[in-house]
Length: 490
Image 1: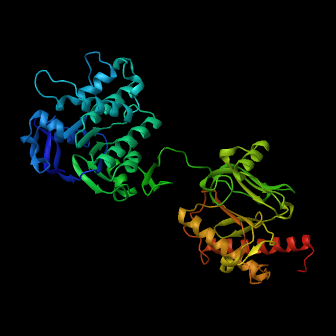
Image 2: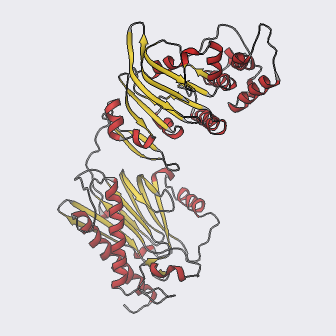
Image 3: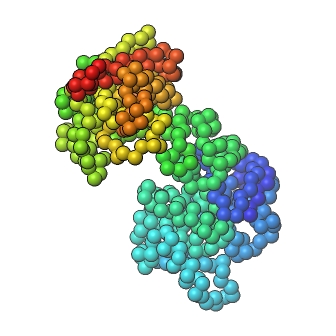
């Protein structure tokens, strides 16, 4: 659709972009990224003909862009520049209607039904129909930006060039506008080339990314190839960390500031746990980096308060998360700073212990009941509705862990719990085979992220050995306490 080959150009005799080559297919969205002064907007201006090229070529539909007349080019390419000048007062609809100019012919062109359709559709696409009779200068900067995007869409050119289209827009309108542009590309086969300042937005909405540095292409490819710690860090000269988007197979970037003060050393101690018949809780002054399968705030995050709440064995709520949130509020917990679990086990029988190694200490908390024990290898044969769960495990580490060590710690803890079930000869009551856990076990691993760096937590590492020993020991003790409470023979 559009081919750029060895393109160079700039302002006057100063070359800003050097030997740029790439192509964009029909219906594809290409995002152009790069730090300030890298040549992003200059490249777009050369492609659009606003600036003359010095060397190279721009081909549209197999022909050099220079062979098209101004109107012919405008029927092929719609351009949204970064800045807009409007010396005359126009209504919003009149401004959007200017996008139909390339489709007019003769001195006294008449307004067609097709023109009216294109303008009204563009107004609706960008959510500004209600402003159509307003003077454009009375709108906010973000609203004006949407008007000019609508003008470019009304042009109905097969190629759309956008220079930071989300300028001045709040996050809701950024999403709406980029959703519109993306749908425009998919549904109508429009080719979109857009300059982005926001790397995460570019990743979400683009098929491919072109990363520029000092007027040259530093990297071009799909977002997973371009948005990498080392690539972004070397071009922008900033520390960054990439991670997957929670809903899409797209990378997202987080800035890691160098100016943040280092966290002062601190440790979590056994005495900070509170155990009662209603709950087990832990409150710490500094937040702990946490990975869990909790009811409230599961996943990865930073938290100061941890609650393992006792509920009745016949507990049944229509919305468990909402009910648990109400419980936490009622008991004075800060919802965004708390991880909450639930268990049918009497929490006053919780086992909490601190284990020491050469690197520091690990604290383990286990509540364990085995009345609904399950052999996971036989779970396909089960048809009983399960009750609220029983074995909840916390692993609190005084040390600094990378993300992979959190996952390894969860695996090690799970293996240790399963071994404890085997040692205590816990059976699945439906299959009479050795149980591996209970129907709704939950696990939490948290670390202070200060102190010694602990890169791994597998079962033969120093940290893993301590976790394995501690979880096994506390689970054995918790199961024995459960058996005694139930009058079982131990």
